[in-house]
Image (cartoon, rainbow, N blue to C red):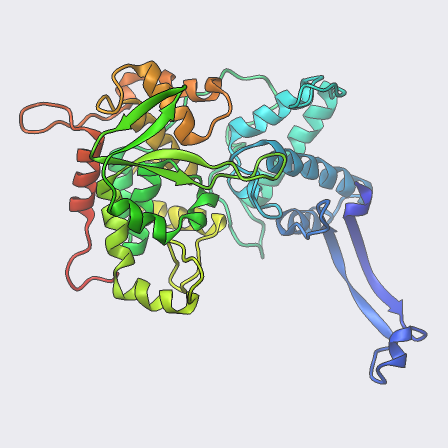
Length: 417
């Protein structure tokens, strides 16, 4: 991977005899080089986060050490964007902005294994090498990305290395889902209905952050008009109850780079809220510039689709506001909101009667290849999950929760859409 790392010590390049002078009489005789490090992936795309880190790290360290750190970080980025469903479509090195400690631990497990993901043989990586990579990642997150030196901007607050080394095999950590009151808090501190709709939609559908920009407005419109539907769960037909609709999600591209569509179950309350936003003056104004092209259901203030990074930045911004007001106890992320959907569906007894049936449905809704991944949701302690009841003490169903969420957080008259 040495060709992916370029280290510049400054200086000049003599261009006095360059062929560029044949076409331009003002081309300079010398080019000045900046000092720094640039790192590229296999597609020769610049990786800005890693490049900035190594440019700073190079102060006081050898070029050999810089290249070792670069390669270690490239290995992690390649693994995440190739094998991890949450990061397969991440651009450049954006996956480092949202990767969780458990995902890094899974990478180390892959390193220790003598099998590739497809079952073919590979060389297991020695423990010392894994420890060296672990140290690289710890320094990158703890001393740069999550605690930037002077002159660099803070771009990530949640530090996956907050509790130290990740290469030591740890017990499987429990899923920590965003809960109803967390979501309500995020929506309450949002200033625009486009943001409120997006947060409720993510919570009620289980979409990944990179899938948000691929939700067509036409799909929302059609679903707002639909009645009962059926989906196939474990070779059996499941009749979707009337307060819900089945929605196709254009999922992440798989390892063969083909899209993996799936169905999820979402409430009509949420669909109707999004459709109402799609009928607003702001949305219609942005819609004009799209002409006849398919338009996404969620647009930012400039009328462009939300990128994965923009979704993360929005949730981070709203989390900071909610934390400052004491409305939530810990920062939220798109992944925690997706976990919240999983926990909520698994507790939706009005969808399917047995937990096994709901588990199979959840596997399809989240797009998990293995049921083992989905089974982690069954280990969430009962005391962690919030239950809301009506005036008669009967637990509210999921569609009733979404109606409650919509009514308690709807835009007031005169407020910004």
